Length: 229
Image 1 (cartoon, rainbow, N blue to C red):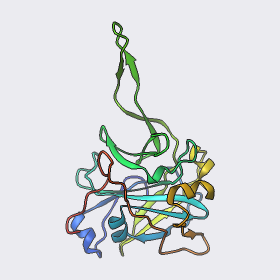
Image 2 (cartoon, rainbow, N blue to C red):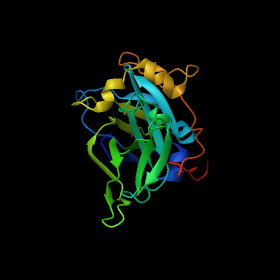
Image 3 (cartoon, helix red, strand yellow):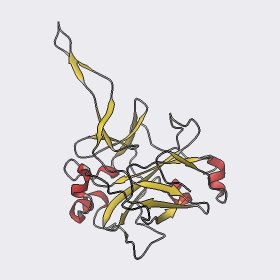
Image 4 (cartoon, rainbow, N blue to C red):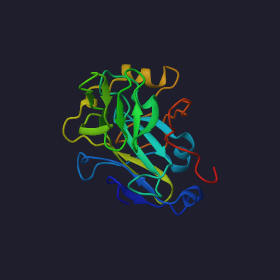
């Protein structure tokens, strides 16, 4: 099955998948080579329960998110997102931050400086401000994504037997590359008591270090409980 951006996949063997329909797997860029290895990270059923999951592949810290809400581009399809765990800005714990929807854009809010990152393509959301010519009071504009990716996203797909697989993308340069392999920065993300489970090309793994989504105060949760959960 294809792992390209916005591909749709249906798992016919997992009853939980049958209850929620198709799933859009997000990704971006191109793999290192056409033969780049897909790594099994977890089962789809487990990701649906956990909502977010952190792991390390070939030394790179990445995080997965399951979003069960209908997407604007696909009115009935939930989505899975995968991106670098550590914030491009100053190495903050981006993927432990709250998940919000702003003007229809699913995004992460970094706990350190509140930078908002579009989960779909890794761009930063910004909000232009103008000033009233008479009062000089600021007038906030509409939130916008872009213009360039600052947080690297990776290919993700689901297999017919209910596994979630990730393919690391490394084309070009993205700002989050600076912290992508930093174990020191990763400690801020999950804490010393919850280490990442490393995976490498010579030892594909079917499990990962997991962290439940314990954030209760986001403006709007990325995921709601799928039917039947």
